[in-house]
Image (cartoon, rainbow, N blue to C red; front, top):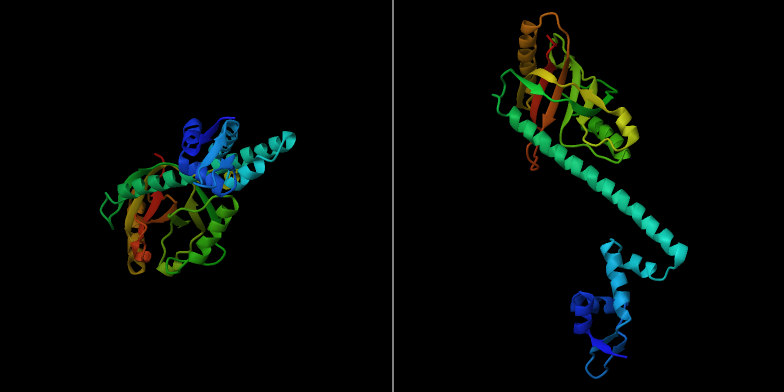
Length: 277
């Protein structure tokens, strides 16, 4: 029976010589003969199909150990094994789709942040905001802008992780529009974050909306000593335009780079939706 050198076999099977040497090294498929004098490897024609099976399974995404297992299975056992692999691929595809949604959502947030920074900081402005999907939870204790609510926002992350997604780099709070006397009087009612995937049915049920529309806003770099003054400026402008209207204040904090150092890197926007005319 005709024998083929490793170079000839590599050409026939459309693989590299290094690949055949690797298969030999890990005992996945060994040459039919080896010359003891020069250590040359020789393959037989029937090994072409064996190598093609390995190539096929590798292309299908199986690991070497999975391939080693698969080539020893027959009939229903092989079909069941490949069915499990198909389910694994479905899960990987879904995970990649979720990852893509998260990345695209981050890009959207960065574009929105860019649009915010086109307005003068610390000055009231009006802008249109598209509808946003959010997950929110009520606060379990009094939290004001003077506090450090990292522990509370981590509770929001737990819900998202449980539902096979994760929070992004934008968190927020909401509270009623009122004539507060001091910063200590502002009590957050909800903690919220934007979500970009609703593939999990349970998570989809929990998704709320920040409605689209025109908002009166003010943005600033986070500074507790100036926060109340910014809020008063926004509230006064809103009351002048709509003296008898009530509303919800959304406080949204974002960063535009990953080299975060401290909370002063956050660009904060206070938003109040304008009533429909």
